[in-house]
Length: 399
Image 1 (cartoon, one colour):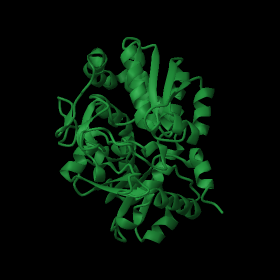
Image 2: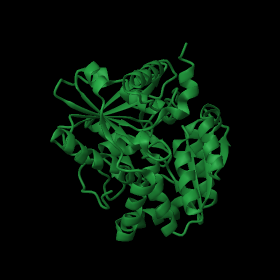
Image 3: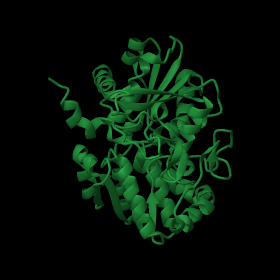
Image 4: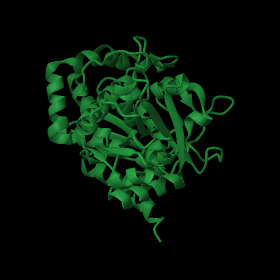
């Protein structure tokens, strides 16, 4: 991870905004916590001792660098050069660990004794519980009641790691509601608790901080592509987007290179216009959600619309403010994939390459035929997680 990234027009400004998106819309009781983070995070992560501990853990504990794998049979099918960034091979099974390692080191340096987190698919919860066990810090994870049912293996892992899993029983009982409960907990315990947000959402500095910790993904992509293709830059980078942390990490070091097409794939659920969808950019408009101004699904009078996706990790009514700006500015291309398309893409990858992807990542795979990539193009898909946690869902599609 580069300690202080080069500034460009798609990065956060000194007021915490990406264009007109971002900021910190928070209750007064949280102001000291958020200010403490804002004032210290850049300085702390730039310290040589922090950099050494973080990079050593990424290498020796997480298992980085993750491979960049040319998927030969998938490439043959789509008549282009498809590479998979294998974040599914990280310890705990997804990219989420890159961020939780960074944030737990930050929390320790700020003197926090407890960590609270939210999780949808459970991967961020597992990654948070993992680093809390590693650093001997109390861990509380909020998870929607519905997600607890459909992601039972990850709930078991969190409990085995010593975390307390608390059910969010209001609203849609999914990620949005878990985030609400985690924020309430933080408001009531502002002094000794650090909130490890799992995506590039929330009040500034969280979207920037999480993106920096995830930027290791595109940092590795550049030198891995150079080794394999002779060029550091691909023609396309494709990633799924719920809140959007894996996409933020995959896009990070290509943001100011207009020759690289950044493709974000949202969850269309049962269809964009069915009322059962999480395709934020297709259905949403600007508003404030979980502490930042972004694009979110909402009613005419500003009430948040309940999202839906077969994938617990994409079941979120908004996107991170940087993604909102990438969409609004036209720098990013936003597509969507239905439940059915994502499942079929998962089976396709599994049977062509012997890799079972997470349902979230399958949404990114589902648009390969819609990119318009040519025979000589290089397409990198960020395979953000592995499919172990989704086997119960996949089994419903096997005769």
